[in-house]
Image (cartoon, rainbow, N blue to C red; front, side):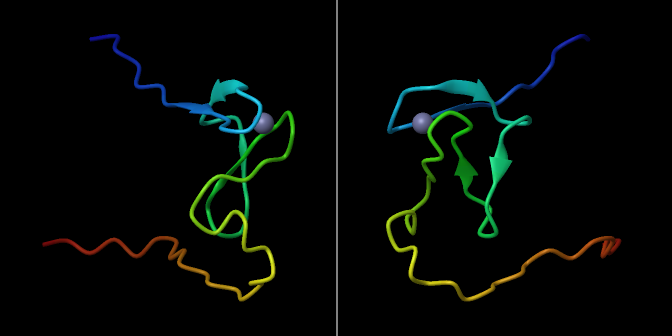
Length: 64
Ligand SMILES: [Zn+2]
């Protein structure tokens, strides 16, 4: 099967549509518009909160 799952990001500020796998994400994991720099997510307007919340765990795969 040649089905390719491609998610698309659409900027709510300027309407730019781009493939979700080529856009950039901020430290919170929210998509950042490549055209205008608008950040998506519930905290997009709360830029004063700079607390680092790293939730990335590399190869921690646990078998059931
Ligand atoms: Zn935009």
